[in-house]
Length: 211
Image 1 (cartoon, helix red, strand yellow):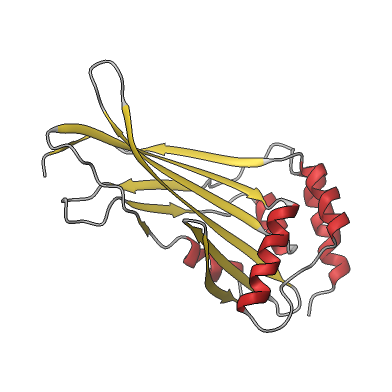
Image 2: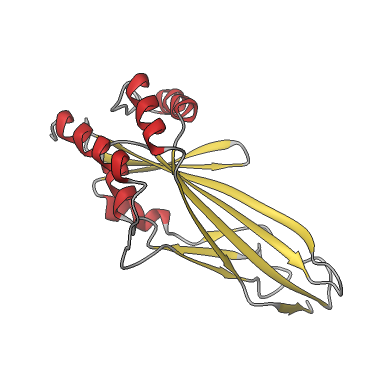
């Protein structure tokens, strides 16, 4: 079992230097695949290299939960303005539990939390996080031109969100919920982070909807 003191030391160091410029060899990649027909459930969103940046990997490995917030929007082109026809949002939450040495994955969709399981390594957990997401956004107007935009915000959970997650985990699993830092230390680290986020955006090619 990993020593908690080392984990806390890594966490504090990550918080101190998270604001420094990072030049990762890879960056998270987002892709949107439009539906091929009206019978499809909706656009497919694929995300890769979600933890390419070292500071976010260090935070997760130090038991600080991270939230990956996705927002997909469907836009219809017009002569003068583009109209937002719909949006689809979901969160993925990952937390490392040093007691069990497992990474726990949670999905939040339409206000409900879903347990996606626990995994022995961050790489294995990342494979599940990067499973393509099928959405419900389908164009409504035949003969119109459309495009999708996808946004991803990766950030450390707020103290209130962490407490909510801990209460939910206690309700769905036997035994105590994963917790590595006290409320006071979490607040201190979040202040050191300064609300730091990693934001990524992408846009699909424009396509003609003739279904």
